[in-house]
Each structure stands twice: as structure tokens, then as C-alpha cells.
Amino acid sequence: MSELSQPTETGWYCVRTKPKSEHLAARHLQGFAHLDEVFCPRIRYQKSTQRGKVWFVEALFPGYVFARFDLVTDLRAVNAASGVLGVLKFSDHYATITAEEIEEMRAEFPEEENEVRVIEATIHEGDEVILTEGAMTGLKTVVTKIIAGQDRVRVLLEWLGQEREAEVSVKSVSRPGEIRTEIRGA
Image 1: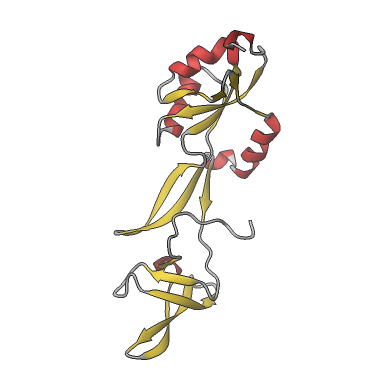
Image 2: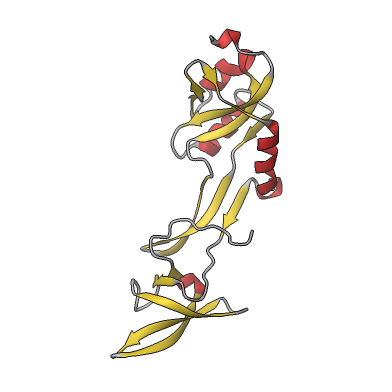
């Protein structure tokens, strides 16, 4: 099936973008290609770095955005937009997404927040964590108690041959290997 034999119906398509350029490609699709609907869901999360915990924003689907357009009349403009590598296709068939699936995703990413969802780590009693700040940075320990309303946790430390509990900020601990975390109970 060639591009011209695709249905002329407007639909949602998955558009491949250059790495780390999803939000820029989405803007170019709206501006240059004059598409009315482009959806680029993004997440904001905290990650431990050498500078301490830093907030990062990235696309929920790295390398992809969703756009609603007519394949026959708008394909050339979509492919020519800055930051776009092309429309996802398998063999000679362009992959489509239903409007219902897009609406479900949009419900998770309120427009007033510019389609960015904050993903926050949750730590529970008994979780193994690593201290990311202070004199004991890099030390593995276990959370023994969550101190409600103070954003602090009590951890078990081995100090001078004895086990002791110490209170630290929730922001100064992370789970081993943690890059992104999910919201539990959301």
C-alpha cells in the first residue's frame, strides 16, 4: 500500500523525533506544519547527581510525539518540520492511535500544567536506601520509620560498631539504582 492509497481520513499518528527534541518538534509541528493537535506528554522527576538531587524533565515516550493530521495532505509538511525524523510506519502501513487512547493519556497530563507530570519518589519503612547528601553520602541503609508531616525518615546506621537510628531528610535518600520512580497509589 503506498502513501497515496492510505485513507484520507484525519487521524492520530506517532511521529518520530530527534533524541531529546520531542517538545521542540511538537512546537514546530504546530507552527510550521500548522497542525491543530500535537500531544507530547512529559514527566518531571528528581534524580541524584554529584550536585545532589536535581529535577529533570523529559518526554514520557522518548523520541516520539503524537499528532493529529490528514496523512495525504499533511505528511510532507510533518516530515519537513524541524526535529522530526518521520512518521512511524511498519512496512507500508502508518501506525495510528485511537482518539480514545489519546484522551486517556491527556487525562493523566492536565493542560494547565503544560502536559508535564511530576513523578515523586515514595519511600516506605523497610526500604533499602542510599544516603545522597551529607558526610555519609553513598552509605546504604534501611528506613526504619517515616516521620509524618516533616519530610523526614529515620534510618538505621552502623556507627562505631553499634546500630543507631538517625533522622534525615527524605530528599537526602534514594533507592539503589533509582532513576525514575512511580507514584504509588496514584
